[in-house]
Structure formats: C-alpha cells, structure tokens
Length: 553
Image (cartoon, rainbow, N blue to C red; front, side, top):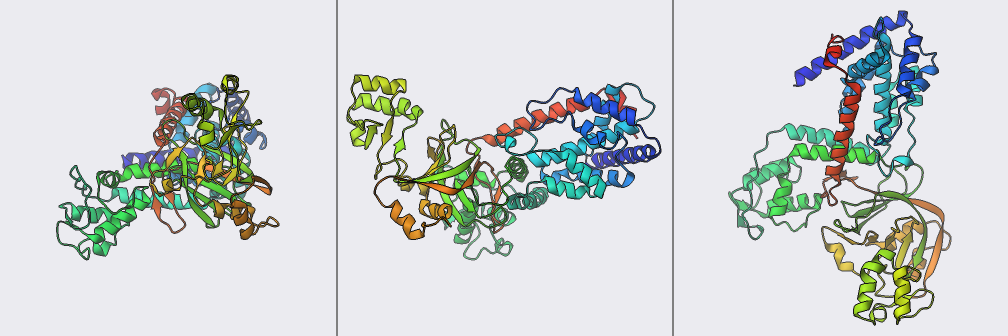
C-alpha cells in the first residue's frame, strides 16, 4: 500500500513537471479562462466553511490567465501537499491528477493537458491553504475567521516560498504546534508492537500490593505512554512478579490524571479500558483536535479566556503565545440534555453578589412544577417574582409566569445558584461564567452537571485577571466586592474574548499529553462530517476511470 502511494505521488510529480515545462513555451490563457469560468458555475458545498467557486478566476485574472507553475514551484507544492498529514489533513498530492481529469472532462476536448494540470494544482493548493485556515467542515467558529487563500498563494508564488504560505495559513496557536508534535509522536508509537494489557476481573479495583498477573504488560504499556520510566519496566522498585506495586500505582495515577479519570491509583475497569484504547485511535483524536483548533478565531494581540469542555478546565492568557496565568477547574453542561454550546463570546461586565434571573427553560421545567407542589418554594430558595419582589404567588401570577410575562429571580446570598460572582458575556444562548455554592462537585473527575452555563472554581483569581489594570481594582478590592453584600455590576473598560471549544487531545505547556473523555460524543459526529466531505470532494473530482487512465504516466 505504501509503495503504491509513493509510486502514485512520483507519477503525479512526473506528469505535473512535464505539464509545467510544456506550459512555459505554450501559453494557454483561453483554456485557463474557460476552466476558471467553469469553476464559477459549480454548485457550492453547503457544508464547507468556504466558497471556492471564484478562486481560479481571481487567481488567474491577475496574471492574464497564463500558467502559474514552474518545475521548481510544482515540486515545492507537491512536497507540501504530500506532507499535509503532518497537520492531520488528508494527503492531497494524489488529488491533483483527479482534479485535472474533472477539469479536462468538464471543459471539453483540448489539444493538451498542461493548462488543466496548472489549474488543478492551483485549486488543490488553494483548498489546502483554506483547510489550514478555517478547517475542512463548517463550524460555529467559521464565520469568525476570514479565508482568502488566493492572495496568500499569489504572494507565495511571487516569492517562491510556498512553505511560508502554509505556515501563514495554519493556526498561530501554541497548542496547535504542540499537538502537531504529539501527532508525529503518536504515529510512531502506533507502529511499535505492544502486548495487549490483561483485563481486570469484575469486582473491586486493584489497590497497591494486590496480586496482578498483568503487571509486566501494564508496566510496558505505561512506559510506552510516558507514565513510567523505562528503567522501571523490568524492575519497578517495590514489586514482586505478579504484584500491582506502589510504583505501578503511581504511574497509573499519572495516566489517570492525563485522561480525565479519578486519579486514585486504583486499577479498575475504566482505567484499563483507557489504557487499552488503540494508539491509532489516539492518533485520530489528535487529528480531530487539530481540525477543531483550525475553527478558532484569531486570538493574537490581547488577553483571552479559553475553556475546553472535555477537560473541564479554564485557562486565562495574556496573549496567545504565553503560558496561562490562571488554570481553574470548571463545571459544564450535562451531556444528555443541556450541553454547553461551542462559541466565542465577549466578556463585558462582572456582577458581584448577582441576582440569578431564572432562564425561561428552567422556569418552565423546574420552578413552576415545584411551585405547584410547594407554594413556599420561592421563600425557601430566596427567590422572588422580578419587579414586585413577591414570594407568594396566586393563580394569576402563576399564569403570567407560565405565559412568560413575568419572571423569577433569586436574590444574592448563600443559596444563589450563581454564587457570589457572575462574568457576563451577553449571547442569545444565555451562557455565562459564574461561581456556585455547590463546591464539592469540583472534586469530581467528570464535571458535567450544569444547565449549560459554566461554573468556575477559582472565581476570585479570574476576577483579578479580568480586572487587572482597571483603576481601583486591587486584589483587596476584589475580595471586598466578593463578600456578602449588595449586588454590584462593574463594566469592563476593555472587553475580553472567551473561547469555549472542544478537543479530546491536549498538550499542556509542560509537554504533557492529555486525552479527556469525549463527554459529548462530538468526535464521532466530526468523523462523520469529514467522511461525508471527503466523499463529496472525491465525487466532484473523479470522472470515468477510462478517462483517468488516459492521463496515467
């Protein structure tokens, strides 16, 4: 298979080099003009994050519809397209010939194939740059980024620096670079032979000192993944053969921490299942995570807050290249019914000791049924009818609440669902960041308990980060504002982006790889979207096999 692919790329390179050389002395502006015009008539892909129909016209009109590629730049392009997998993208070098076939067939008979090859290579490179800029499929973040590979490729060809265009198109996120390196590492690991890990019998998880026949295989697996020093594989310190030792338990704890599992050092079925995930599956997780990072908006030049839902973590950054100044555990929306949406918000204000305005959905599904069971429900929960302050409701008030003409809010205090602070980022989904009186939930490994909003553990540190530099807001002033008292809203003089994203592969600033659980099942959905996109592109690029055979080297 690898030989066939390598031979296929050499064949593509040979054909394109010959076509490019022929095109130098045989200008074909009319043919290229026709191909560019035909591209504008294509049906757009509604699932794609970009519209490519005018790319060829824009690209070639600036050069009088003459050929763009030389032997040198063709070789550069095919080398870069052949290394697209380094970014977790499908290798595109073999697609050039198929695109040329489609162009040739759609454009009718012609005396040569050089213009078709030239336009095909241009289109494939433009697609590659666009895929790097905004991803392969449409996402919630796609509208936040501008894609213009035409300008990028034109500059790159003039400067003979196609690699520079690839670097410019890829996300300028430190995490993206670390994930690229992790992808290369895990591809290598996936090729290494690894003995299957012995399963744990049903029942209680193993604790240190328990008999465990699978100890050697476990040690080898933990060493392969970097959680156990290789020198300890055959001599894990305090062990005897067939014993689940304290050394192995410590390595298992490290593994659990990296995979979002309860870090108790016990070897249970959930931990064994995570250890046994095929490394090829981890490779795919990294590829999908790289795709999701391509969806994010440009974050350069300003402080921002980022929240990765599967990690149940928040980070605050002064800029995109710096290590985070703050890391905090968070609680996110329930996986079954109230998932936290992915979006980019703008933090505009902080409210200390806030009122909680109960969202209509919660009012209908929870508060109204509770009021029917217990007329004193509002009193017991420090709630009131907004506007009137009433805590006892009659039939007319219940009807107005049900109709949505009145609403309920919870007063500031120890029972308030928002805790003592809310971070406001106005959005149609009514999602914001806040504290919570339910502090014990932060100790859980899996933390999807909310109705969709994000509960932050270290809200005081986050408030200091957000208000840092704002006149009058020292750490002492923040602490005083958080104390029980009157509700107070503070508008931010400088708004701040809040990125709520989703990746099941991460690498922290210390180089530690983390694979949190796919809590919302988004990886499988993205996999399906990519498969459908690639199938559509293949159908659009492939004509009859007979026609393709006429162009084989």
